[in-house]
Amino acid sequence: MPTDPQHWLERFLHHLQTERRLSANTIRHYRRDLEEILSFCKDAGIPQWKDLDTPRVRQYAAQTHRRGLGGRSIQRRLSTLRSFYNYLLRERVVTRNPAYDVRAPKSERRLPDTLNVDDITRLLSARARDALELRDLAILELMYSSGLRLGELVALDWVDVDLKERMVRVTGKGAKTRVVPIGTRAIAALQAWRGQQADAGETAVFTGRHGRRLGARAVQQRVRRWARHHGLPGDVHPHTLRHSFASHLLESSGDLRAVQELLGHADISTTQIYTHLDFQHLARVYDQAHPRARRARK
Image 1: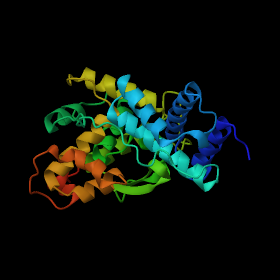
Image 2: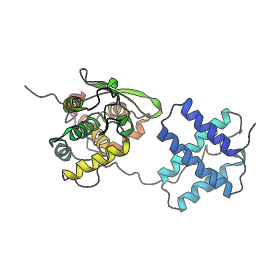
Image 3: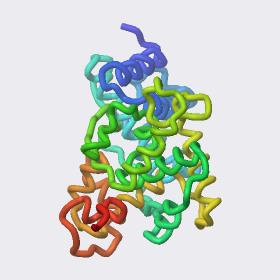
Image 4: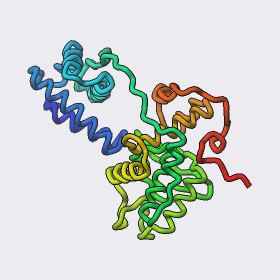
């Protein structure tokens, strides 16, 4: 059986790609974390993965903390290491998981950046002046309407969007699929953009000037530009719209489980970060709870 640490690192990453079907971006994070841990092992004179023990893992966590890494980042690296060793246990490369009982130093939990409803209204009430701005407005409306992650948004194909039923099917973390509703304003924005999309043969929902699928970096730049152009304070990122979606919906409905499902969180503790808001006892249904999902009154 091979003993080279890099060999098993590559085997594990291949396992994440082919068996667990994680996204390329997530796998990059795993690689970065494990290569940093491998560098620590080399510096500490630890030749193989089976030689890394719990005291050394605690030493690694303490060392990175002293260098200024926050508790959440250290916890993520330890989680990566636990997952890796669970794989090595399965492959009978090691006989124990040295990261099993190691916990990161606690750090203050940072609340997500959100926009208030007035800022959202200002952001989304602007009129688009050309086809690209119609696309940008559709991006903004959809992210705020349905709480999509940036990676989920750029991966969307038109086959995933049901404009008639007002639903979108997205593939989130861990290749998990969920179906979420789309608000009326977002439907209108998507229809306007689809009518302007240059290449009718392109399957991607959001495309650039040359008709190819829009990348995550381009979306980040366009969202930032749109927000600055319309006078919003601070630096607005695509994830700000997802956070705003969750905060406003939770504030209106108080239904933590429903927001968890809409966001695609595997663990409700991830969703609980939004409970800093004062709950209001309002709507039961998405259309009533979400500020821009209400149907126009006749």
